[in-house]
Length: 567
Image 1 (cartoon, rainbow, N blue to C red):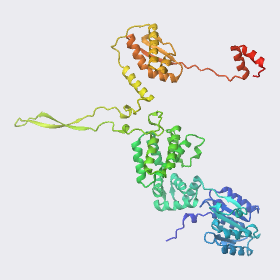
Image 2 (tube, rainbow, N blue to C red):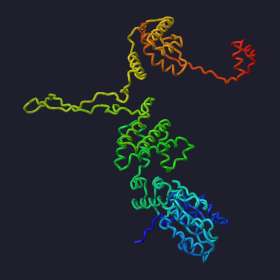
Image 3 (cartoon, rainbow, N blue to C red):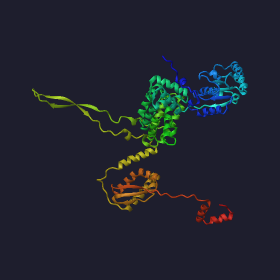
Image 4 (cartoon, helix red, strand yellow):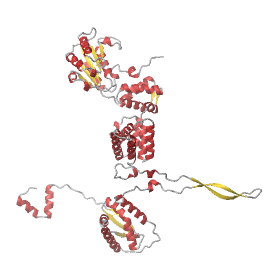
């Protein structure tokens, strides 16, 4: 059986071109070697698995490569000495190292010392290392590597040339995994590699370890489903389906979907964080300028663009705000599941009925999701049926008749949200009821003739009645114009703006009822006409303002001259 070598070791970079995502650093080091401009103490710092130690080894070999011919695996031939500071962190270890530094190399030009995890050195070891690091021999080069730069004392930092390694981008990691798949004859979905790269969180070594694990699970064919199952992550499909349910205001289905997610072993905190990120990605996909910020595969990007057209920006902004608020409260909550459920119900209620709700944490009432109709019932009816037989008997047989349910209007459209009797909404609802009661079929009712003057007299009388009742707002709107009578008993009334038009519509049923009863004509119709006039506004200069005021009051100029005032 052939010995298995993990991908992190098998595909460890052997030259600067193989290092992923650190082009700026590798180019700097390469040019420094070519131009003989290399510092004698370098510090490589950054997150784990981004290529610090690999770059240190490549640099160490490249320094002496021109002077020595040796195998790539023989570090001693290149005068490379590695020290693990995690296990050799005492003063004696550093003193032993400084003693070796004084000895010049037998072959080659430089001796290169790589000290990994240098932040693990003790305070005394750092102090013992200071003098050697500040004035090293001409043949010695130190390369220090660490993941925690802040733990290194400032006197050491000031003596080193610092290179900050960055996290490896998702797309860079995905492309590198794709190259490995080609070398290993593995077929992989683009989304599958993308999920692995995301799970690695910027560390290439972690990405390769996850890659090995998934290959062991699914063989030479990596699919998105296999990767999500093996890594136990919530993939894009979960959030796409959840968002579709929320946009459709389907709260029961949303709660069932969340229960399924919990049943798979995921934490509510993990889910709500992922949901907030999903809403952020949808917001990014709304604009062509920001679409490049989507770090997803091509297939997933198409899905994001498609769903972004369904979700409005106000919905996404409110949804992100509610998800982030849930994230902040999650750890302190006593009932964490209930907190997440309330949040997703609130998000699913944002677009409900398209209405603006005063309550910020509004949730659609449960009554809207009751069964639309009763189930079909079967009723036994006993009906006498004559059957001809040899005995000519009449036999009573029982016949099963299916009773059809009565037509029921959808509850979602017929039920109204309960409101306070003192709120404005309750007043509007009462007006809508009055409107329905008034607008009936009056074909058989009288339609007496009347004049425009009679109409205008009754119009003013109705305004007076409204003022006495205290309904001065609608009275002022009705009094803004004089009604005009046209043929077929159509009354045209002009309103100056959209807001007043909406208010007039709410008060129209009562006005219509009043006029029909007074004029004994039930064929009357009131048609409001929007007559918006836009006046151009000018920005006047002080002189123009003064001239305008002087036209109205000429004594103003005399006042200015008397007191010698400036404009």
